Amino acid sequence: MEASHTIPASSGSAAETPRRGFFFTASRMALGAGFALLGFAGCLWTLGIGRFLVPNVVNRPPNRFKVGRPADYPRGKVETRYKEEFGVWVVHGDYRGKPQIYALRTVCTHLGCITIWQESERKFKCPCHGSGFRPDGLNCEGPAPRPLERLAIRIADDGQLEVDRSRVFQQELGQWQDPDSYVSV
Ligand code: FES
View (cartoon, rainbow, N blue to C red):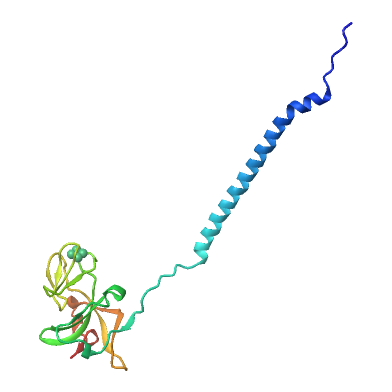
């Protein structure tokens, strides 16, 4: 009679060891990936919350700023140095025969592009659709339907001209008659 053949206990373990190792490694990788995913989601969540907690800070220039003394503005001068930071032209020009210093917004009254001062042609020109404005701000060509807007200007206590961007004056509404919209010189 043939002796029964028994499988040694050790042979099963030896065959399964690589498989167990594989499952062990795979589960560790899955666990690691899960943690990584959780960490990533946590970061996103934190950033999302952070956006609500931290206000959007925009560094805007102040509304009021000094632009020098009236004597710094000879007749006909168009000061361009305040264009970039404040969006303003400061001009010693004439309006209705009266010499004045006034501050014009650089924004074109057609669709809001920024005008350019062309000294050779003595006019503000809009690069977008060709509108032109005279030194006094009146529209003279192109599709702009109205003059540039003035900003409040005054002589401060220290004798300097001070522009206030929070107050706007529109010629077509008769607001350029307001003495706060110019300084007589
Ligand atoms: S935006 Fe200036 S002409 Fe159109």
